[in-house]
Amino acid sequence: MTSATASELLHLIGKDSAPQGIVVPEDLAQAIQALERAIGADEAGRGDDDAGATDAGADDGAASGSGSDDEPVSLRRRAWPLLDQLRQSARQRVPVVWDTRTLPSTVPLRAGGYV
Image (cartoon, rainbow, N blue to C red; front, side, top):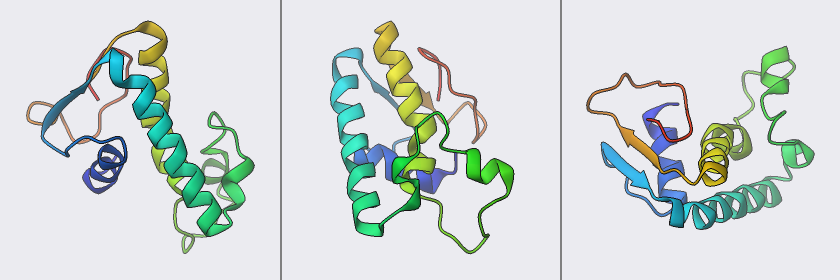
């Protein structure tokens, strides 16, 4: 995930784009709802073809090469990794933690681990 995308998504869930941070288990439901609302608003405003896509299949079009390079990437597709992370962490009741000071700019997402 690029830093610009990460900053946008963190802002949408009410977090600063600081080099390190945490979403505690008690705040996960609110963060998930905020991100889902933003995705819905984005799709309504764009008349997005991805609106009916499931989150699990959010990258199917990009993976198959069916999209044009000129088409902007939808918020649903950009947000899917974070939304999935938030949901997994909520199920496990563990925080989502990030620290970009000690990790590379792109890190696999893991529930209860570093983003």
